[in-house]
Image (tube, rainbow, N blue to C red; front, side):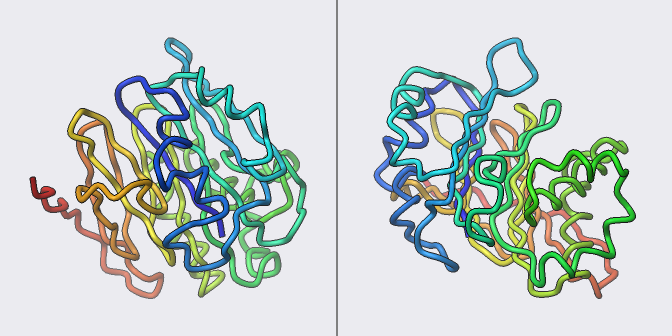
Length: 265
């Protein structure tokens, strides 16, 4: 159910991160190596990136498969950025809302993606709806599970939570309402990356030349890629990564942060 990737670091063409790698997000749209649910991500794609001096990201999204968009190759070759978030989509409900349902979702400085599915959607999340401002519900970009999960995250961000707290609390709230959900969330503000591993694969790479990549799966065979354990919150900057265990909703013990081991050289 989708593959996604976020990057922070030295300025790079989008294509160097998404298209050129042997197993990059472009190829993952039809031949992912580690996807546990679904086999083809052809129900839309999107990329969001930050231009120098502008805190509000730009987005390019389409309803069809990434390989069918001839314009994307030119965009990916020419556009450069120090931060991006991109995703290819395998829809929970085929055809739901087209381009509007393709990640990344955006508001203010944030870009967001959800890899997974909410169990029992939409009935399972109905009890959470009263917690959202009416205007947030009326302005949902799409009528799918990812859009509502994003609304829950965004409400917390606007309420003053930092990115890590907003993702962690949303995952635990949704997991309690809809047990068995897969909730790999990915969020960036152009300066940090925050993500959760909850039911699907997540990896990160701290590049020797500078920069951090967080992705559903490695885009190459670099041995420095590190897998994120399931039920984990990841918080990353351009040079460091912090992992914090997430507890099941029934476990009230607060999580304690743990630094990942340094990759071998």
